[in-house]
Structure formats: structure tokens, C-alpha cells
Amino acid sequence: METSQNLSFLLLSLSLIFLFLNLSETAIACHPNDKRALLEIKAHLGGENASPFSNWNPKTDCCRWNNVGCDHQGAGRVNFLVINNADDVVGQLPPFVGDLPYLISLRFLYLPNLIGPIPTTIAKLTNLQVLEFGSNNMDGPIPDIFENLKNLESVSLYSNKFSGSIPSSLSLLPKLKQLDLFGNKLSGPIPESFGSFKTGVSLQLFDNQLHGPIPKSLGKANITEINVSKNRLTGDASFLFGKDKPLTSITLKNNKFKFDFSNVDLPLGLRDLDIAHNMIYGSLPKQIGHLPLQFLDVSYNQLCGKIPTGPQLKRFKPSYFAHNKCLCGAPLPPCK
Ligand SMILES: *[C@@H]1O[C@H](CO)[C@@H](O)[C@H](O)[C@H]1NC(C)=O
Ligand SMILES: *[C@@H]1O[C@H](CO)[C@@H](O)[C@H](O)[C@H]1NC(C)=O
Image (tube, rainbow, N blue to C red; front, side, top):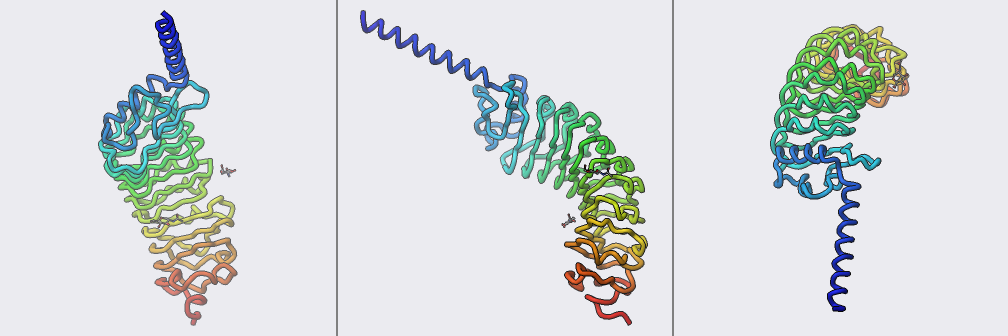
């Protein structure tokens, strides 16, 4: 009698403990819609065999899965998804990434076997602040899906095989600070609409196949850094410069720019200036010696005349001035 009472007490306590565990599990568990989307992503990218998903067990709370982060308000909505550095992630990003409507940060990087295009369903992620697909093997055009993604501050789609032209809707992002499209096969011109950047954008477009002149509109944009090296850009780029521009870094290296450098007004805060390997002519602007320059390369152009003097210029080796038409004076040999 006594034993059976003890036993039923034990059973009752055990079931209470289990009930409690279950309740607390439900209270923090991720939203079922988010879990469903994540499980679809896992299934399309290698499933059980892919290490980043190793503890993505359908029976557990997805807010505790590796590489997933949920909000702190307890609604169990997925805010962060960062899949990084794994060669066992294999396949194409499925459209289900668009079914995580509370995502703030979506990042897939250093995944050599992640292939295929960017799903257009990303257009639904209106809370997104950071979008990064970097150093994968993705391809196809960059879809023109940015119009409604008004919270994006950083768009990083570097070192993949993206092709086609740069979508002009990127310029509609009112909070954009960082645009990394380098290391792809993007072609066509830089969009005219990029002139409407107002937020101090760092534009990293190097290592693509962009061609034609830089649109004049960019002279009016609020850009803090621009690197367009290793493209096929032509013509004038002097309008990018200007004494009061917030630019700290300008890299035009390895293009076919052709303009007179003599009278450009260099931005007063300029730290990096690389115009090497173009067809830029005229002389070096006088004020170049009085900027806070940390890097300067004007080699392989058609420049001429005496290199201006100034405290900063002494730091740069002759090779950074070499292979011009007739530049002379320190650190090159004296003018004749
Ligand atoms: C450019 O953007 C920066 C950073 O957002 C801002 O502080 C600055 O006022 C802007 N400049 C202009 C001229 O709009
Ligand atoms: C610009 O891009 C080139 C690659 O073409 C890179 O080597 C260089 O470091 C970049 N410069 C700056 C200042 O970002």
C-alpha cells in the first residue's frame, strides 16, 4: 500500500516536472513559421551532412540552434542567420529564406559549394539591415529587389560570380552605408541613380567588368570611399573630386580613365589616392603635398611636370610616381 502511494507520488511529481519543462520550452521556442523556413533551408543545403546545421533538430527550439539568433522580446522570431565557412553546405539558396520576415541580418559567407542565384523572395525581408553573400560560388544577375528593403545599411555581395548589370534600386536605400559588389563579373555602366546616395556610402565595385564613363551624377553623391579598380571604365572622373567632399579614399586604378588632373580639387580629408594604370594627363595638383595621405600611387599615367613638395609626399617611393610621361623632381630625378 505504502509503496504504491509512494510510486504514484513519484509519478505525479515526474509528470509535473515534465509539464513544467514542456511549458518553459513552449515559452521560449521559436515561431513555428520560422522553424519551418529554417528546416527547408537546411534540407536544400545539404541537410544532416552540413556541419552548420548539425543541431538543427526539428524537435528542439530553433532559437537555440547554431548560427541562428532570435529576438530578445521572447516572440521567438528569428533575427539572425549567419552560415559561415563550411564546404559541406551544398546547393542553391532556396526561396524559403524569404519566409523569415523578422530577419535583421542574413549572411552566407565562405561557402565554396553554395551555388546558384540570389532568391528574389529576399524582397520580402523588410526588416533586413545587413545582407551578405560573400566568397561563395553564387551566380546569376543581382535581382532588382531592393526598393522595399528600406532598412538595409550594408549590402555585401562580393567574391561570387554575379553577372549582368548593377541594379539601380540599390540607390533607393535611405540608410545604406556599405555597398560591396567587388570580385564578380558585373558589367555595364555604374547606374546613373547612384548619384542620389545621401548617407555617406562606401562603394566597393573593384574587380568587375564595368565599362563606360562614371555617370556625372556621382559628383553630387555623398560617398566616403570609392574603389572601382580593375574595371573597364573610361573618360572623365575629375568630378568625383572636390575640396569639400567627404571622400577619404579614391581608387581608380587599372581602368582607362583619361582626364586632366592639373586642376582637380582634392578632398581635404583624403587618405588613399590610387589612380595608377590609367591615361590621366596634366600635372599633379599643388595641394597634394598637404593632405593627410597614407597611400598614394599615380604611376603608369601620362602625367607631366614637377612633383609638388609637402610633408606627406616624401614618404612615397619613386615607383609610385614612375612610368608617367614626364613627371620629375623628388622622389624622381630632378626636372631638367
Ligand atoms: C554625408 O553623410 C554623412 C554620414 O551619414 C553625414 O554626416 C553628412 O552630413 C553627409 N553630408 C552631406 C553633404 O549630406
Ligand atoms: C581597391 O581594390 C584593390 C583590388 O583591385 C585592392 O587591392 C585595394 O586594396 C583596394 N583599395 C582600397 C583603398 O580599398
